[in-house]
Length: 238
Image (cartoon, rainbow, N blue to C red; front, side, top):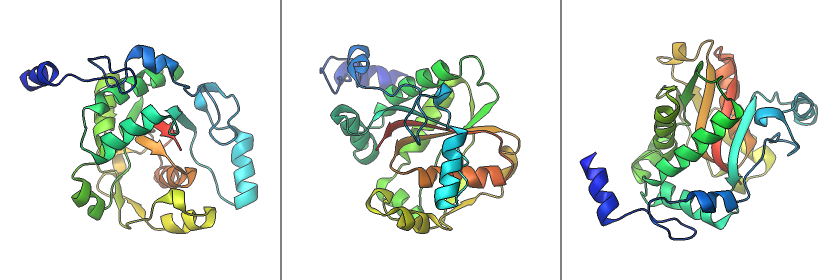
């Protein structure tokens, strides 16, 4: 687009790490980051395609009496990394939406790397935002990121699958029990869209994981409504 062309000329992107122009995170700096290899999110041990071990799901059920419904959690990097943290904060809170293009490219490559040739039968969705958060931020970062990844992977994006009916507190400041209570009855499926997830494999795109409780609540609702596999594709883990 002409607007994008002039933006690149007048205010080119600069790498958050080395300040080199044309990308927010250049390939060289991306390679230097400590990125996640294919691990189980729960035990942090090696697994195929970031799959959650069945034994880890069983442990969650036995310890907390909760069914763990997520199948894979694919993570690019750790939120403690200064560069990643700064990029996410600028993208989420300071309207630097162009950062989504770099993040989408990275996550698309990460997904292809782990599901090479076997991802055409998926749909992409994203977490919803409560009304009050939408009017204060003006945009949903996860939606922007999901749209870019959908375009990169040529996978259909389904919008407004969830409704956030409760303005929840930030999960990272709460105890395990408080997190579960905080999420209770906060999300519902959009009944007008529910047919779009029946018998589908779902990729949920988001920017950061602060707790698996939120992820699992979404997966539980999806599978209750007859979704098949549920994968979370995320930039960073807290």
